[in-house]
Image (tube, rainbow, N blue to C red; front, top):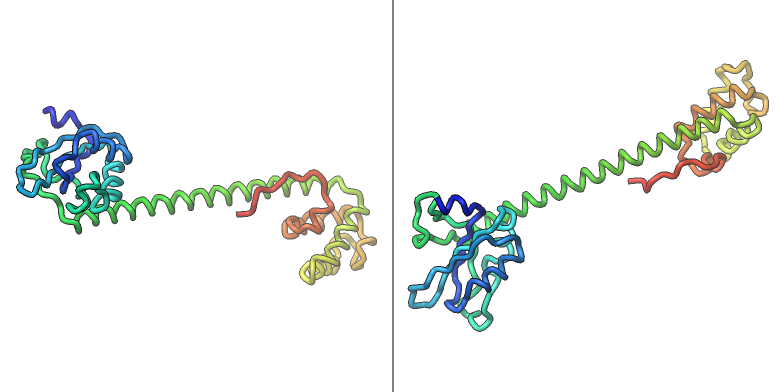
Length: 238
C-alpha cells in the first residue's frame, strides 16, 4: 500500500558508477520536473556498475528525462569509460507484484521508441497550437476589417456629392479595368435615370449607392482609403 500512495512515474536508471549518490541523481533529474523519490540499488556486480530507481511526478517529466538522458549523460566524468547512463520506464513495480531487484532495463530500441512517440506527440500539439494561433489572427483581422468597413460605409453616407465624384474618378485612374467596367455597367443599367459615364452627371444618391457597393472590393486599397478619415486601424494581415 505504501507503493500505491507514492504515485508518479518510475524510471529505471542503469549503468551508474558506484560513487553516484542520491543528491547527484536528484539534481540531474530535477532538470526535467519534480522528483518524488530516488532509490539507489547497491551494486553486487564485479564490474561496479550500479542502478537506481527515480520516481518523477509526471509522465511528461519522465519522458523528457528519457529523451535527454538515455545514452547521453555521464554523471561522474572520471567514470566516462563506463559509458553514459541508461534511462527507461521501469518495468518492475511493487504495485504490480514484481520485485524491484529483478528489474530488466528495456533495450535501447524500446527506450528510443518512447522518445520518438513523445517527440511526435509534442510536435503534433505544437503544430495544432500554431494553427490555432494563426486561425485566431485570421478571425481578429476579419473582425477588424468588418469594423473598418462599417465605419467607411457610415462616412460614405455622410460625404458630399463632390467627394463621391472624386472617389469614382480615383477608381477610374487607379482601380484598373475592373473598376471602369463596374462603373460602366452601373451607368448602362440606368438605375439612377442617367446613363452618362461622367460621374458629375449622377445624383448623390446614385453615387452613394455605387461607392458603397464598390467599397466591399476596393475598401482595402490605399487610393480608396485615402478618401476617408479616422478609420479604425487593422492588425497585421496574417
